[in-house]
Length: 310
Image 1 (cartoon, rainbow, N blue to C red):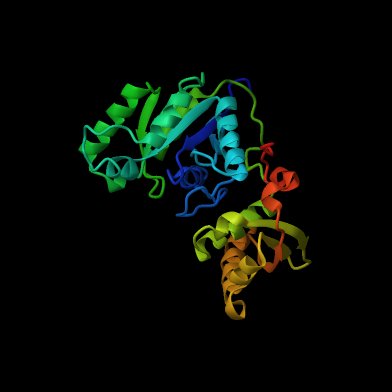
Image 2 (cartoon, helix red, strand yellow):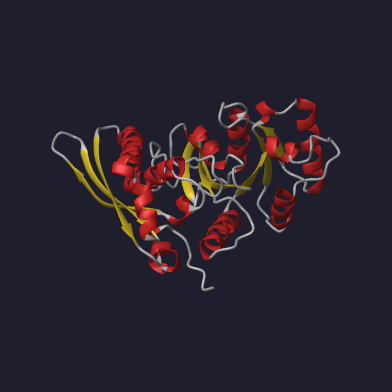
């Protein structure tokens, strides 16, 4: 295996740039949850991809934004920590947001969020790659102008135009990133696509369904834990999960009138967990109030986050 390569690629960018969608598309399976709502990813998620003799560990990071709460600060710290430890950094930029937010003027300045991220990236020694995402939604002349502005502000090792959702441009991106990985032995078995246990992914899938069904700030104040996972003789699994909320009034909303909301969440989650497990699952959801979980160090450790002291 002396001719093998292996390394870490950090996917960074503003919230909703498409990092989780890109990761899932690169891996060819769901390893990170996706939502139209910003700041869905809370901790770093690793997806493992083999390209020829190269093994790449892609690290999906929480979106980079100005943190306001303790959880926000922990998420942003996790993202920058992953970028600092990576062998390569891929900055994702939402083409539609960047250009649309600039009133579609080719001479417009770079968006504030992207500019802030790029300023910090200047101090990172790892090769930096620019990935302009959602290019299928923007005219090509505007894309070229955007790429030129971004490279003028921070020279990148290479620039890629992609549509993570449609899968466009991913082969070129994979090949270029593989070439940037250092020589060394693989860290994971060839058939492993993620480093998180299935029970953790199952909890994240249920949390994704909470984001889809609930509105406003409520999903951000919930967390999901897989309390038990028992494999049955027939190959199915019996799974019990608890959805923790901060207030009793939130518990009522999650359950819904006549239990309709929790049933819909459970049905959608069960289907996707079964696909990941490649076998039927029996999912049982419970909702409990844990008033101070947002300030509980143990909950942060369970999510793979460092607990900010202030």
